[in-house]
Image 1 (spheres, rainbow, N blue to C red):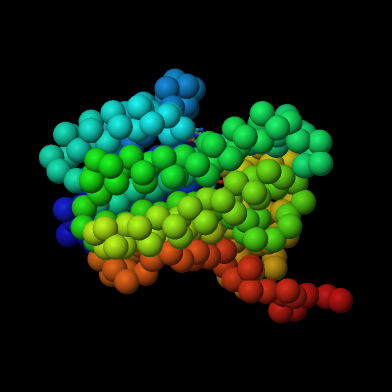
Image 2 (cartoon, rainbow, N blue to C red; image 1 turned 90 degrees about the vertical axis):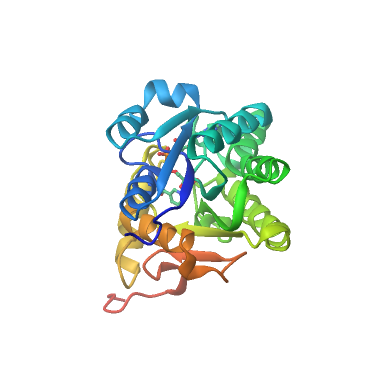
Amino acid sequence: MGILSGKKGLIFGALDERSLAWHVALACASAGAEVVLTNTSSAIALGTIGVLAKEHDMLLVPCDATKLDDLRALFARAQEHVGGKIDFVLHGVAQSMNIRRHKRYEEANYNYFQQTLDVSALSLHKILRTALELDAISEYGSVVALSYLGSERYCDGYNDMGDAKALLESIARQFGAIYGAHNKTRVNIVSQSPTPTKAGGSWGGLDYWYRYTDQLSPLGNASADDCAQLCVALFSDLMRSVTMQTIYSDGGFGRTVLARGARL
Ligand SMILES: NC(=O)c1ccc[n+]([C@@H]2O[C@H](COP(=O)([O-])OP(=O)(O)OC[C@H]3O[C@@H](n4cnc5c(N)ncnc54)[C@H](O)[C@@H]3O)[C@@H](O)[C@H]2O)c1
C-alpha cells in the first residue's frame, strides 16, 4: 500500500525518460496510483512516452493542452478509463520558440511570445477551467504545476519563459482559491532546480547554470526524482491543507547568496 493507493492521476508532459513528468508518473505508480498519461500527438510520435505507457500499463491519450476541445475529450476519456473522477493532475508543459530560435528577449518574435504564454501558462488555465466545467477533479484533489525561479528573478537567457512562469504561478493561485471553495482541491507550484531535459536543454546556458546552482545550493541541485517525490507528497492526503503555494525543490538555492566554503 503506497501513499497514493487508490488514487487516479492525469499527467501532462512526459516526452522521454529525462522529462520531469516521466519521473513523476513512475513515482506516482510506485506509490500506488493509477496514472493516465497525455501529450501532443507529435510528442507521442517523436518521444518515447508510448514505451512508458506500455511498460507500466498506463492509458495514453493525445491532447494539445492549448485546445479546449482536446481537453474536454481527454477528461472524458480519462474518467471513463478510471471509472470516476481524477484525484490529481500534474502540469509539466512548456515550450518557448524564442528560446529555441535563439531570439534574445529584447528581440522577441511576438507570435512566438504568445505561443510561449499559451503553451506554458494558459494551458494550466484551460486544463483547470475544463476540469471545473466537467467537475472532473474529486473532492480533496491535488494539482501541481512545475515552474522555475526565473518566474520571480532575472535569469539570463530564460527569456519569455520567465514571463510565462510568472503567469503560470499566478494562475495556480487564482484557481487555488476557486477550487478550494469548490471542493477543497489544492493547486500548488513546484519550483524545480535546473534539470537536464529536452525543455531544459533548449535553454542555451543550462550546462553552466546547472553547475553554478549545484555548487551554490546547500543540498546541491534537486534531481528529477527529488521533484517527483515532492509531487507525490503534494498529491497525497498528507498535505491536505497546503494550497496556492510555490514550493521550492531547489536544494536551498533560492535562499542562498553565498555558498558555505566559497572562496572570495
Ligand atoms: N528542466 C528544467 O530545468 C526545469 C526546471 C524547472 C521547471 N521545469 C518545468 O518542468 C516542466 C516539464 O519540463 P521538462 O524539463 O521535463 O522538459 P520536457 O521537454 O521533457 O517537457 C515539456 C513537455 O511539454 C510538452 N508540451 C509542449 N507543448 C505542449 C502542448 N501544446 N500540449 C501538451 N504538452 C505540450 C512537451 O511535449 C513535453 O513533453 C516544464 O513546465 C518546465 O518549464 C523544468
